[in-house]
Image (cartoon, rainbow, N blue to C red; front, side, top):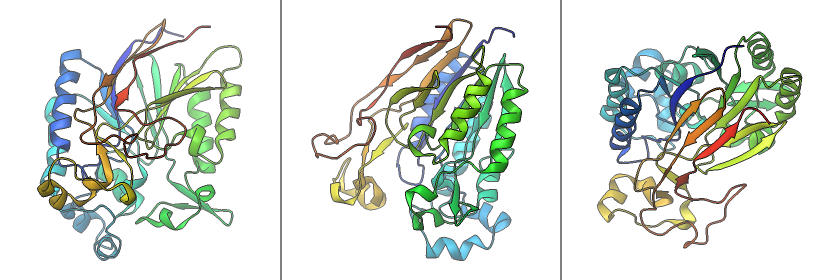
Length: 327
């Protein structure tokens, strides 16, 4: 097996439909990506809803449904189009996974087409590594799998959402077992904390890594926190949001100004980061090198507001780490 040698920037949970400065954050990221001469950039979901023109052309049935279930929907279509234009002009290959909020105001097909993905799950090989993008946006209800569609997952219990369906599991096993390269798994919902059938993934890892490590890393977004745990000898990395942490209406606070809070109403329910958070990752024969970033909060922190947290504490950081491939 050839020695891997890949360099990329990973980011997640940009939420163009909530944040007022998403374009500025992407400008910082792309400038750094060019400086570092990375092979590609990758996002882990919850980036943007499709714009109105795309919906009218590709998913006209969604027009009425969007009005009935607006969620975080706004009319900043110029910024959405600018996001894709910036990436295209950079000349840097871009890949990604579907986040749950991508399907708040459309169906899954429209969402992955808008994000210029080859499908709801897919893979690509780069410099001796196979990257596998998974779709965790599936509901299992009464024994049947359903797609996330126009925010329908809000109506289901936690144990019914974030599944990796059987068809996808079979495809995943084929991609891992047939790969001539070590594999990196990418998803929006973290497999360890959120995927009800995570044991299916662990079982696959045990089979694949029997004798040598073939699955070397799993990374996910969704939680808006920085964290790392080890399962079956594989690091499972929660990548912090590029822009914010969600607190909810009970912690509503004016952040930048009253004006911004009025124009961007969901800004009151989050703790924005002053600077864009993303990580530069290099993978070589020694291991996985993660160069993170650290910033501060705009306004009171979650701790100052006594906001609760889940598996990992909230912090305005993506920690730098070295994850060895041997030992």
